[in-house]
Image 1 (cartoon, rainbow, N blue to C red):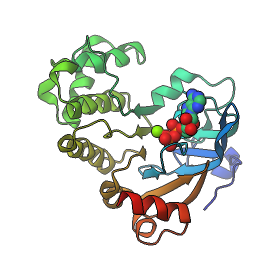
Image 2 (image 1 turned 60 degrees about the vertical axis):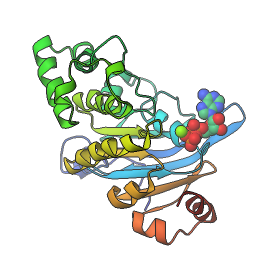
Image 3 (image 1 turned 90 degrees about the vertical axis):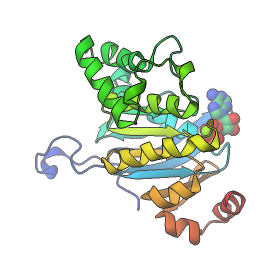
Length: 263
Ligand code: ADP
Ligand code: MG
């Protein structure tokens, strides 16, 4: 289903708060090229509140570029992105504010090696949210508890497994209380036995109502946990639907080819 690109005037919205009734994240007609390479040709996607949407597609299909446009690490060439009904593309947008509301977790954990787990989390809280040390410490402890690492607050990244480092990275993102979390292949760099812990944390976030857009090749997890799966090929979303439909009855040739390679 495609949604109208126009925002409802406030009156039509019953005077509700801005963004009420809109999806949490909306990508409309997104285009992005690198030189002559057209990576995103016309991508539209909506993620509803508390929804977990998985994005699949072969390497080079533009998945990371789409996520990076969503928190403005890449500048879209055309199209609009709305967060809770508010445009986050175009000029005049406060990028710090956008990145505070959109948490991102990458394949590499991107922790500061010279800071322990607690300080990796409190740094952003103090700098971005201007929290006091006490406030930040309290919130960091809560975030570490949520990812099952309450006892690792004093460990440096080098004293944590890859899976634990990734869980600290997730804790750092959720501590900012984002409206949506973007995950770009969060388990691809992990030893197989550590993947389950990270997926378990993602499942718990979903159960707590977090809105999530996830790029990952963890098919079994997508099948079981995703509300919707989106398949990208050749700069477009070629099909999407509930995981069961998409995995058992793919309509598009490129989806079939992809799934036969991965399952
Ligand atoms: P995916 O995440 O699906 O593997 P990406 O979004 O990373 O795909 O990349 C899509 C295409 O865009 C690839 O061909 C990649 O080489 C190219 N690309 C990505 N980022 C850049 C960049 N900064 N400069 C030039 N080409 C890029
Ligand atoms: Mg990628």
